[in-house]
Image 1 (cartoon, rainbow, N blue to C red):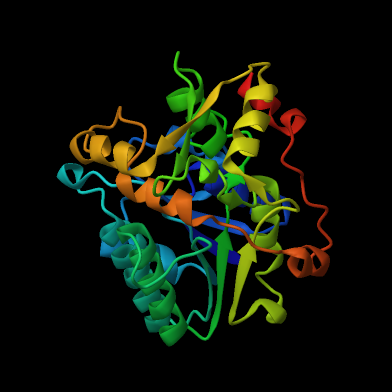
Image 2: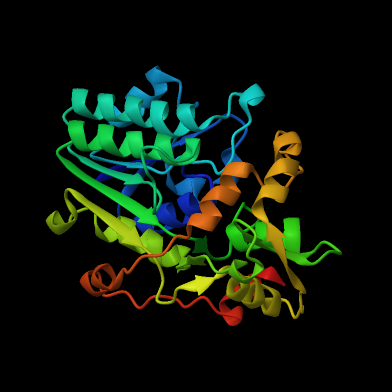
Length: 306
């Protein structure tokens, strides 16, 4: 069986492709020109060079596939570079869905995110509308909606590595965000960290499982941790004691208003909004279904941060 993977060169995509190959699937993967080295297993894949806006290449790839995995996603946009949530989360997904429908491909698995809503941030809205379009056009769809994903990124963007680089390694206290004026609410929002290997395994095991058809799997690890707990686990992974201080969201957002357009600035207003909403879920049924022992979010599992 041939699987078309869109978004295969990033952190999660490489793990999905490795799992597909080890499970004896043949992999077709779209890679932007010049990004071939970002795919660890490129010599074992059928590589199509182009981008998600190149309808001709995308159709050629889909024609030669039986299953589609859409894993393209960004956490912030840069409009001047045409890197936008609309283009990558919705427009690109719509193109692949339309072409799958044209070529009678019924199995389609989409990477989304836990907590997406129709009236949220641009990130959430574009993910939500892509989900709706998929449900309305493909017969055997599955949506994978993780909370925070962690694991060794091999130099690619990953939550814990980016947090360490952009905030925890700086000679300043770590910010503990909160809304309003009650500092005792600082850092109380929670997430359910899940290991990238568990996510990749669920993607691949769900391909031929009819139980997964027309399902949205909300994926999170075994523990719901608040922001302060997450910072402490990450810091202890590289033997660092980090001072954590309350940071009013309105103040940080006012700074981000002017600086978020620069790539060096570590956080956007929308990212703060989504952090404060929290992001937890219970995935016990999914782990049981696929006989997966979830990797816990502990300092020992974060030794790649050293």
